[in-house]
Length: 125
Length: 125
Length: 125
Length: 125
Image (cartoon, rainbow over all chains, first blue to last red):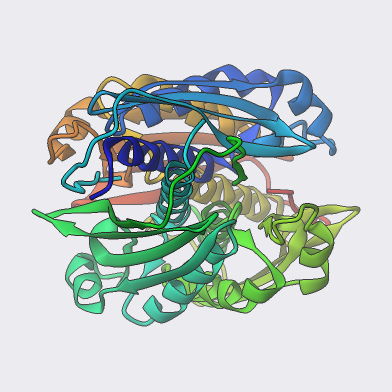
């Protein structure tokens, strides 16, 4: 009943919510941004239909967010840019999270490929 | 470029991924299931376009999963049933997570209402 | 080799780190503070040696932290006060997290009871 | 009022609880273990008094835990060995998490150095 394109968008959303709420709150400093970026991308790429994830944690924003003497902050959406590509039954969905008016916004960038009725099958998380 | 129905499905996926990865791993016992259910539902209902969330943590499955003397286990998808309703620009999406062949599966149950082109605006997490 | 008091302090720290990193990032609004407080306290009270946990999410701080039109924010240490009591082999440890100079600080408030050599046994998380 | 050794053990516990509950539930496969190990270690090493963290996610256990066709599982304590060293005011605490009787156990391995009264100051998370 849902189309392949709708399923693909549902899958894309799952990945975004997963990435955000798994890793938000992680202690991060300019010295640990690269390893966290790699782990986030590779972890989410394990999920079904997730073809590619790129995470860029912005060192400059991390440095700006460090507001106490301990030298680190906690990961939030405002510190990173994320792009993902989901492929589901021939439909490609491109999504990103980036700052809009001061807030991190998750958005669909493109939904490409044919949309046809599916059997409504979903995904394990 | 994305339709309202596609946006609605993307939003629905975000909520599911958020719920799962925010709360998976929480210590849970039969004595704490009700408070955790309530907190999970109310937390996710804060997110944009999320009209209702119901979480049922199955006491019987929690009891079965407690395999050490400490008397608690960690929340996983196999211990709960979840249903959500997302409303986005006149489109209603119903989703659920339930066990399928021994695994928790997140799935679109219904996408109802008209689908028209949108401006691609997304959501903060 | 570690004393009971040291073990008790180790256990107390585990609970604090668990509580913080399990729940930080949870969407929260003034309408959902009570359920989240209850779930956090009851979840962590499941852990070994944890006698009591009180979590007070400050509605006024939550309201102040809501800086966009969606009407919610994400849980961080600055929004809540936490107190815990850990009992380990006759040693009682009292801890709290509260704001100090603008930052949330986890601290030992009191370590009471005898401290003797133990066998170094730990805890499952 | 708490001794330096007790403070050091409290700090050690915070790191362990943080590591566990921040990263438990992360999607993991044999292809993503190395990046996750690195990110976990570097993230927690940002925290105060944390001198070193080593995380070994056991590829063999990950492979055994993959029980569905999607090819990944979720990180739990049973899949990894962790060692940490905390230095606090001249006290060194060594801790580890490893399997004991089928369960992951966080334990104090050694508390070394003098213990004297402190001012009770704690740590931000």
